[in-house]
Image (cartoon, rainbow, N blue to C red):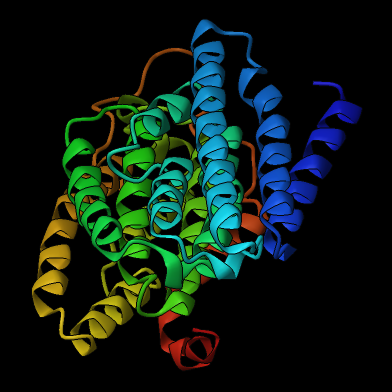
Length: 346
Protein backbone atom coordinates (compact mmCIF):
# COMPACT_ATOMS: atom_id res chain seq x y z
CA UNK A 1 0.00 0.00 0.00
CA UNK A 2 1.11 3.53 -0.76
CA UNK A 3 2.81 5.03 2.35
CA UNK A 4 0.74 8.22 1.98
CA UNK A 5 -2.49 6.19 1.91
CA UNK A 6 -1.36 4.20 4.98
CA UNK A 7 -0.61 7.47 6.79
CA UNK A 8 -4.04 8.90 5.91
CA UNK A 9 -5.85 5.75 7.10
CA UNK A 10 -3.81 5.61 10.34
CA UNK A 11 -4.45 9.29 11.10
CA UNK A 12 -8.16 8.80 10.34
CA UNK A 13 -8.30 5.91 12.84
CA UNK A 14 -6.60 8.05 15.49
CA UNK A 15 -8.96 10.95 14.73
CA UNK A 16 -12.07 8.75 14.91
CA UNK A 17 -10.93 7.13 18.16
CA UNK A 18 -10.02 10.48 19.77
CA UNK A 19 -13.32 12.02 18.63
CA UNK A 20 -15.42 9.23 20.14
CA UNK A 21 -13.47 9.07 23.41
CA UNK A 22 -13.51 12.83 24.02
CA UNK A 23 -17.11 13.60 22.96
CA UNK A 24 -20.14 14.08 25.19
CA UNK A 25 -22.60 14.51 22.31
CA UNK A 26 -24.07 11.46 20.58
CA UNK A 27 -23.64 12.95 17.08
CA UNK A 28 -19.88 13.47 17.59
CA UNK A 29 -19.44 9.98 19.05
CA UNK A 30 -21.32 8.50 16.09
CA UNK A 31 -19.16 10.51 13.68
CA UNK A 32 -15.98 9.17 15.29
CA UNK A 33 -17.25 5.58 14.99
CA UNK A 34 -18.02 6.13 11.28
CA UNK A 35 -14.57 7.64 10.59
CA UNK A 36 -13.01 4.62 12.30
CA UNK A 37 -15.06 2.17 10.23
CA UNK A 38 -14.20 3.83 6.91
CA UNK A 39 -10.49 4.08 7.84
CA UNK A 40 -10.12 0.34 8.57
CA UNK A 41 -12.02 -0.94 5.49
CA UNK A 42 -9.13 -0.39 2.98
CA UNK A 43 -6.72 -2.13 5.37
CA UNK A 44 -8.95 -5.23 5.58
CA UNK A 45 -9.43 -5.39 1.78
CA UNK A 46 -5.74 -4.68 1.01
CA UNK A 47 -4.74 -8.34 0.18
CA UNK A 48 -7.26 -8.37 -2.77
CA UNK A 49 -8.20 -11.93 -1.89
CA UNK A 50 -11.85 -13.11 -2.06
CA UNK A 51 -11.76 -13.90 1.66
CA UNK A 52 -10.46 -10.39 2.43
CA UNK A 53 -13.19 -8.79 0.30
CA UNK A 54 -15.79 -10.96 2.05
CA UNK A 55 -14.42 -9.91 5.44
CA UNK A 56 -14.56 -6.24 4.40
CA UNK A 57 -18.22 -6.48 3.36
CA UNK A 58 -19.18 -8.35 6.56
CA UNK A 59 -17.37 -5.81 8.72
CA UNK A 60 -18.94 -2.84 6.90
CA UNK A 61 -22.50 -4.19 7.09
CA UNK A 62 -22.22 -5.11 10.77
CA UNK A 63 -20.64 -1.83 11.85
CA UNK A 64 -23.06 0.23 9.74
CA UNK A 65 -26.03 -1.55 11.34
CA UNK A 66 -24.58 -1.00 14.84
CA UNK A 67 -23.91 2.70 14.15
CA UNK A 68 -27.45 3.13 12.84
CA UNK A 69 -28.80 1.54 16.04
CA UNK A 70 -26.68 3.93 18.17
CA UNK A 71 -28.02 6.90 16.21
CA UNK A 72 -31.58 5.57 16.47
CA UNK A 73 -31.19 5.02 20.23
CA UNK A 74 -29.84 8.53 20.84
CA UNK A 75 -32.55 10.09 18.64
CA UNK A 76 -35.32 8.33 20.59
CA UNK A 77 -33.77 9.50 23.86
CA UNK A 78 -33.48 13.09 22.55
CA UNK A 79 -37.10 12.94 21.38
CA UNK A 80 -38.34 12.02 24.86
CA UNK A 81 -35.93 13.95 27.08
CA UNK A 82 -34.39 16.67 24.89
CA UNK A 83 -30.90 15.47 25.88
CA UNK A 84 -28.08 14.58 23.44
CA UNK A 85 -25.57 14.03 26.25
CA UNK A 86 -24.10 10.50 26.32
CA UNK A 87 -24.38 10.31 30.11
CA UNK A 88 -28.06 11.35 30.10
CA UNK A 89 -29.54 8.26 28.42
CA UNK A 90 -32.68 7.50 30.42
CA UNK A 91 -35.34 6.21 28.01
CA UNK A 92 -35.78 2.40 28.54
CA UNK A 93 -36.06 1.63 24.80
CA UNK A 94 -32.95 3.73 24.09
CA UNK A 95 -31.01 1.86 26.80
CA UNK A 96 -32.03 -1.49 25.32
CA UNK A 97 -31.08 -0.44 21.77
CA UNK A 98 -27.75 0.99 22.92
CA UNK A 99 -26.85 -2.21 24.78
CA UNK A 100 -27.54 -4.26 21.64
CA UNK A 101 -25.67 -1.78 19.39
CA UNK A 102 -22.51 -1.75 21.55
CA UNK A 103 -22.66 -5.56 21.74
CA UNK A 104 -22.78 -5.65 17.94
CA UNK A 105 -19.85 -3.21 17.67
CA UNK A 106 -17.72 -5.26 20.07
CA UNK A 107 -18.78 -8.76 18.99
CA UNK A 108 -20.59 -9.95 22.11
CA UNK A 109 -22.86 -13.00 21.84
CA UNK A 110 -25.32 -13.21 20.03
CA UNK A 111 -23.85 -10.55 17.70
CA UNK A 112 -20.47 -12.30 17.47
CA UNK A 113 -20.72 -14.08 14.10
CA UNK A 114 -18.82 -11.43 12.15
CA UNK A 115 -15.71 -11.30 14.38
CA UNK A 116 -14.04 -14.70 13.65
CA UNK A 117 -14.75 -14.42 9.91
CA UNK A 118 -13.42 -10.87 9.65
CA UNK A 119 -10.25 -11.68 11.60
CA UNK A 120 -9.69 -14.82 9.52
CA UNK A 121 -9.94 -12.78 6.31
CA UNK A 122 -7.50 -10.11 7.51
CA UNK A 123 -3.72 -10.06 7.81
CA UNK A 124 -2.19 -10.45 11.28
CA UNK A 125 -1.46 -6.70 11.51
CA UNK A 126 -5.01 -5.73 10.53
CA UNK A 127 -6.42 -8.39 12.89
CA UNK A 128 -4.36 -6.80 15.69
CA UNK A 129 -5.89 -3.38 14.94
CA UNK A 130 -9.40 -4.88 14.84
CA UNK A 131 -8.86 -6.65 18.17
CA UNK A 132 -7.43 -3.67 20.07
CA UNK A 133 -7.68 -0.15 18.58
CA UNK A 134 -11.11 -0.64 16.99
CA UNK A 135 -12.52 -1.90 20.30
CA UNK A 136 -11.53 1.25 22.21
CA UNK A 137 -14.30 3.64 20.96
CA UNK A 138 -17.18 1.19 21.75
CA UNK A 139 -15.61 0.41 25.14
CA UNK A 140 -15.42 4.15 25.89
CA UNK A 141 -19.14 4.57 25.02
CA UNK A 142 -19.87 1.54 27.19
CA UNK A 143 -17.92 3.20 30.02
CA UNK A 144 -19.69 6.58 29.67
CA UNK A 145 -23.18 5.06 29.50
CA UNK A 146 -22.60 2.19 31.96
CA UNK A 147 -25.32 3.42 34.35
CA UNK A 148 -27.87 3.48 31.49
CA UNK A 149 -27.35 -0.04 30.12
CA UNK A 150 -29.88 -2.84 30.49
CA UNK A 151 -28.40 -4.98 33.32
CA UNK A 152 -30.28 -8.22 32.59
CA UNK A 153 -29.44 -8.19 28.88
CA UNK A 154 -25.80 -7.23 29.45
CA UNK A 155 -25.19 -9.89 32.13
CA UNK A 156 -26.81 -12.57 29.95
CA UNK A 157 -24.68 -11.57 26.94
CA UNK A 158 -21.52 -11.48 29.09
CA UNK A 159 -22.01 -15.03 30.45
CA UNK A 160 -22.97 -16.32 26.99
CA UNK A 161 -19.88 -14.66 25.46
CA UNK A 162 -17.54 -16.26 28.00
CA UNK A 163 -19.15 -19.66 27.41
CA UNK A 164 -19.27 -19.49 23.62
CA UNK A 165 -15.84 -17.87 23.29
CA UNK A 166 -14.31 -20.81 25.15
CA UNK A 167 -16.49 -23.49 23.57
CA UNK A 168 -16.06 -22.43 19.92
CA UNK A 169 -12.31 -22.00 20.28
CA UNK A 170 -11.78 -25.65 21.20
CA UNK A 171 -12.09 -27.08 17.69
CA UNK A 172 -10.25 -24.38 15.71
CA UNK A 173 -6.98 -24.85 13.84
CA UNK A 174 -6.58 -21.31 12.51
CA UNK A 175 -4.71 -19.00 14.92
CA UNK A 176 -6.70 -15.87 13.99
CA UNK A 177 -10.03 -17.59 14.64
CA UNK A 178 -8.76 -18.88 17.99
CA UNK A 179 -7.73 -15.33 18.97
CA UNK A 180 -11.13 -14.04 17.78
CA UNK A 181 -12.94 -16.42 20.13
CA UNK A 182 -10.44 -15.44 22.83
CA UNK A 183 -11.49 -11.83 22.23
CA UNK A 184 -15.18 -12.76 22.60
CA UNK A 185 -14.47 -14.55 25.90
CA UNK A 186 -12.50 -11.59 27.26
CA UNK A 187 -15.26 -9.19 26.21
CA UNK A 188 -17.60 -11.28 28.35
CA UNK A 189 -15.40 -10.60 31.38
CA UNK A 190 -15.39 -6.86 30.60
CA UNK A 191 -19.16 -6.68 30.09
CA UNK A 192 -20.01 -8.56 33.32
CA UNK A 193 -18.31 -5.97 35.53
CA UNK A 194 -19.12 -2.71 33.66
CA UNK A 195 -22.32 -2.16 35.70
CA UNK A 196 -20.55 -2.41 39.06
CA UNK A 197 -17.02 -1.11 38.48
CA UNK A 198 -16.50 0.62 35.10
CA UNK A 199 -12.86 1.47 35.92
CA UNK A 200 -12.15 -2.25 36.28
CA UNK A 201 -13.53 -2.81 32.77
CA UNK A 202 -11.05 -0.26 31.42
CA UNK A 203 -8.16 -1.89 33.30
CA UNK A 204 -9.19 -5.29 31.91
CA UNK A 205 -9.32 -3.88 28.38
CA UNK A 206 -5.89 -2.23 28.69
CA UNK A 207 -4.29 -5.47 29.90
CA UNK A 208 -6.14 -7.50 27.23
CA UNK A 209 -4.89 -5.08 24.54
CA UNK A 210 -1.32 -5.40 25.88
CA UNK A 211 -1.42 -9.23 25.86
CA UNK A 212 -3.10 -9.44 22.44
CA UNK A 213 -0.66 -6.96 20.87
CA UNK A 214 2.29 -9.01 22.12
CA UNK A 215 0.71 -12.23 20.83
CA UNK A 216 -0.03 -10.86 17.37
CA UNK A 217 3.41 -9.26 16.99
CA UNK A 218 5.11 -12.53 18.03
CA UNK A 219 3.01 -14.53 15.56
CA UNK A 220 3.70 -11.97 12.83
CA UNK A 221 7.45 -12.32 13.40
CA UNK A 222 7.34 -16.08 12.78
CA UNK A 223 4.56 -15.79 10.11
CA UNK A 224 2.40 -18.29 11.99
CA UNK A 225 -1.22 -18.53 10.79
CA UNK A 226 -2.30 -22.04 11.84
CA UNK A 227 -1.43 -24.72 14.39
CA UNK A 228 0.47 -26.90 11.91
CA UNK A 229 2.94 -24.09 11.16
CA UNK A 230 3.17 -23.22 14.85
CA UNK A 231 4.73 -26.62 15.48
CA UNK A 232 7.85 -25.64 13.53
CA UNK A 233 8.23 -22.17 15.04
CA UNK A 234 10.47 -23.46 17.86
CA UNK A 235 13.21 -24.38 15.39
CA UNK A 236 13.09 -20.90 13.86
CA UNK A 237 12.93 -18.73 16.98
CA UNK A 238 13.22 -20.72 20.23
CA UNK A 239 13.34 -17.72 22.59
CA UNK A 240 10.34 -16.08 20.94
CA UNK A 241 8.38 -19.35 21.09
CA UNK A 242 9.12 -19.69 24.79
CA UNK A 243 8.02 -16.11 25.38
CA UNK A 244 4.86 -16.74 23.33
CA UNK A 245 4.03 -19.71 25.55
CA UNK A 246 4.19 -17.48 28.66
CA UNK A 247 2.07 -14.79 26.98
CA UNK A 248 -0.59 -17.36 26.04
CA UNK A 249 -0.65 -18.66 29.61
CA UNK A 250 -1.00 -15.04 30.77
CA UNK A 251 -3.96 -14.59 28.39
CA UNK A 252 -5.46 -17.69 29.99
CA UNK A 253 -5.28 -15.92 33.35
CA UNK A 254 -2.88 -18.22 35.17
CA UNK A 255 -1.03 -16.83 38.22
CA UNK A 256 1.56 -15.42 38.73
CA UNK A 257 1.30 -13.82 35.26
CA UNK A 258 -0.22 -10.45 34.34
CA UNK A 259 -3.45 -11.90 32.90
CA UNK A 260 -4.44 -13.25 36.32
CA UNK A 261 -4.89 -9.71 37.71
CA UNK A 262 -8.14 -8.66 35.91
CA UNK A 263 -9.83 -12.04 36.47
CA UNK A 264 -8.92 -11.98 40.15
CA UNK A 265 -10.25 -8.41 40.60
CA UNK A 266 -13.47 -9.13 38.65
CA UNK A 267 -14.25 -12.25 40.70
CA UNK A 268 -13.50 -10.28 43.88
CA UNK A 269 -15.82 -7.43 42.81
CA UNK A 270 -18.64 -9.81 41.81
CA UNK A 271 -18.36 -11.50 45.21
CA UNK A 272 -18.61 -8.07 46.93
CA UNK A 273 -21.79 -7.42 44.93
CA UNK A 274 -23.26 -10.69 46.31
CA UNK A 275 -23.06 -12.33 42.86
CA UNK A 276 -21.13 -15.39 44.02
CA UNK A 277 -23.03 -17.72 41.67
CA UNK A 278 -22.21 -15.52 38.65
CA UNK A 279 -18.55 -15.29 39.71
CA UNK A 280 -18.33 -19.09 40.10
CA UNK A 281 -20.02 -19.66 36.74
CA UNK A 282 -17.80 -17.26 34.81
CA UNK A 283 -14.68 -18.70 36.48
CA UNK A 284 -15.71 -22.24 35.49
CA UNK A 285 -16.48 -21.15 31.93
CA UNK A 286 -13.00 -19.64 31.61
CA UNK A 287 -11.63 -23.22 31.93
CA UNK A 288 -12.85 -23.78 28.36
CA UNK A 289 -10.62 -20.93 27.18
CA UNK A 290 -7.78 -22.30 29.31
CA UNK A 291 -7.88 -25.53 27.31
CA UNK A 292 -7.19 -23.95 23.94
CA UNK A 293 -4.58 -21.59 25.40
CA UNK A 294 -2.77 -24.63 26.80
CA UNK A 295 -3.16 -26.27 23.40
CA UNK A 296 -1.54 -23.26 21.71
CA UNK A 297 1.25 -23.19 24.31
CA UNK A 298 1.82 -26.92 23.78
CA UNK A 299 2.06 -26.50 20.01
CA UNK A 300 4.35 -23.47 20.23
CA UNK A 301 6.96 -24.90 22.58
CA UNK A 302 6.57 -28.53 23.59
CA UNK A 303 5.76 -30.05 20.19
CA UNK A 304 8.79 -30.25 17.94
CA UNK A 305 8.96 -31.26 14.26
CA UNK A 306 9.89 -34.97 13.97
CA UNK A 307 13.07 -34.33 12.01
CA UNK A 308 14.83 -31.69 9.98
CA UNK A 309 14.43 -31.67 6.21
CA UNK A 310 17.27 -32.25 3.76
CA UNK A 311 16.53 -28.99 1.98
CA UNK A 312 18.86 -26.01 2.23
CA UNK A 313 16.92 -24.07 4.83
CA UNK A 314 18.11 -21.95 7.69
CA UNK A 315 17.47 -23.59 11.03
CA UNK A 316 17.36 -20.26 12.83
CA UNK A 317 16.01 -17.04 11.41
CA UNK A 318 18.37 -14.13 10.89
CA UNK A 319 15.95 -11.78 12.60
CA UNK A 320 16.84 -10.64 16.06
CA UNK A 321 14.04 -10.24 18.56
CA UNK A 322 12.29 -6.91 18.19
CA UNK A 323 12.96 -4.78 21.31
CA UNK A 324 9.31 -3.65 21.25
CA UNK A 325 8.17 -7.28 21.48
CA UNK A 326 10.68 -7.86 24.29
CA UNK A 327 9.33 -4.88 26.28
CA UNK A 328 5.69 -5.85 25.67
CA UNK A 329 6.41 -9.48 26.59
CA UNK A 330 8.00 -8.39 29.86
CA UNK A 331 4.91 -6.34 30.76
CA UNK A 332 2.60 -9.16 29.59
CA UNK A 333 4.08 -11.59 32.11
CA UNK A 334 5.50 -9.62 35.05
CA UNK A 335 2.99 -6.89 35.98
CA UNK A 336 1.22 -8.87 38.73
CA UNK A 337 3.76 -8.06 41.51
CA UNK A 338 3.25 -4.33 40.92
CA UNK A 339 -0.55 -4.62 40.87
CA UNK A 340 -0.91 -2.27 43.91
CA UNK A 341 0.40 0.51 41.62
CA UNK A 342 -2.19 -0.37 38.94
CA UNK A 343 -5.16 -0.62 41.29
CA UNK A 344 -5.53 3.15 41.93
CA UNK A 345 -6.18 3.52 38.16
CA UNK A 346 -9.01 0.99 38.56
